[in-house]
Length: 119
Image (cartoon, rainbow, N blue to C red):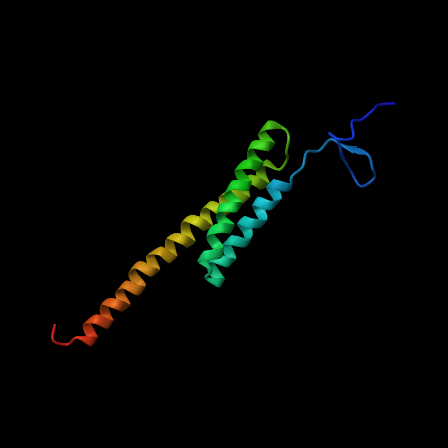
């Protein structure tokens, strides 16, 4: 009968030692990346979008490193979460930055022109 070290072994539901590494960071990365996209697009919450995207990128990179080292699983899931987080961070944050620069700036310029007719 084979002896298992209790501290280093993960167990399945049946109590049988599992050989599969944990995919927790990979799943967290995918969930955060998937949440950051609709929150940035539909809700317009830039202040929630940026932390979620950064967290998705960081947990995805750590998940990829763990999968390559063999101590974690879900390389593809972590990669998908990292890509979603980076895409959302770049596109949505870039869109809102341009909107605030040109949208509010254009409205302010129009207000100044309308309020001072002598200029």
